[in-house]
Image 1 (cartoon, rainbow, N blue to C red):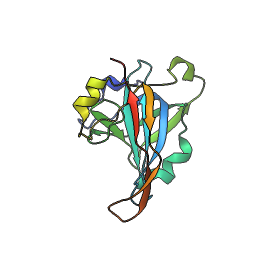
Image 2 (tube, one colour):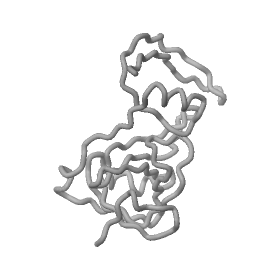
Image 3 (spheres, rainbow, N blue to C red):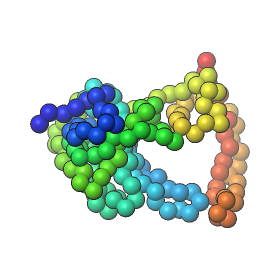
Length: 171
C-alpha cells in the first residue's frame, strides 16, 4: 500500500492513506458545560511533518478504544479540511474522521518517529497572535508570577477555575 506524506495532503476530496504516529491525544471539553466536544490528536509522519486530527463526539465510541498515544497507525477514508480556530499546530489543514475511516495499528515501527513535537513561539509571535484565536502557542520561559486560582462564572452560569501566570520569554 502506498502512503502519502502529510505534506502532500490537500482538502480536494481524494482518498488518502497515511502512516503516522499519534504524538499527542486529548479530550476537548466545552468548559461551560463540561461536555465532550471531540477527541483530538497531533499526528506525525516519518518525514517529521505534523497535522491535527479530530474525532467528533458522535464517533468517539467507535474510535477511542482503537487509538492510543505513542502508537503508529495507517489511517484511510478520512476527510481533509481547512483548520479554523484553536489550531494546536500551524498546519492550515486538518484531518477529521468519518464513519468509514479505517484504523490499522502498525506494530514495531514507532522508533523511526519522534516522540514529541512542539512549535515554540517567541514573544514576537505571541504579540502577533494577541486577541486572535487561530493558533495555540507553546512557550519556553521562566515563570515569574503566579496568581491564586480564582473561580469565575461563565456565560452559561457555571463556575470554572482559572489562574493567571506571567512568563518571561527570552528574546
